[in-house]
Length: 245
Image (cartoon, rainbow, N blue to C red; front, side, top):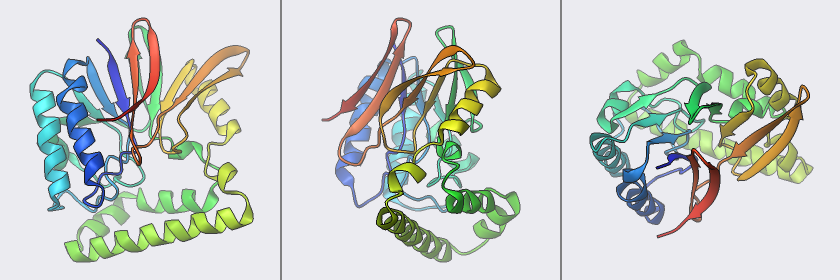
């Protein structure tokens, strides 16, 4: 038995093959897991729990069936689906966790988070994040008609692409959109743990670092653009693997 971690699926109607892969993963490997953790960006965009998309309905059905089979499902909001609320979580049978959260994995305390808060060198993004996480901003946004919210999401995605394009032209894309080493070290020190698991950067890897004179490991989950990615944690250790049908 293993505890499974995934993130950055970015599911939407334009990528049906990945949605199908997700369904296959949930109906097969995940059915035998101790738990499933989704660390954000399950969807490409989420503008409210009244989103009528078939992709959202499909994911809710699959996850609810998984939870009903006895596998608990946990979710941390990402930068694309930070507006996912308790109504959808109930439909999907999943529990929303704070970002970050500490969980016990077979006796090992582990800090889990989406990962965007570690990318502190991207000042423009952090300013946008602070604005959109404000409860008053969210309440005002969710009060708008669905069509207006969808249009805003499309504009935000276009602005994000333009921002990343500018970083590429400046030659700073790889550093600014990745985690800040100082922020990572500070996070390890603040929580006093030896393991962090996160997504967001789309750079799957296991990083071993020394913090305050002790060995620590930071596990970065992969995205699901071309194929799937899963972290399997057991009592014996862990493995970070790609997924395909």
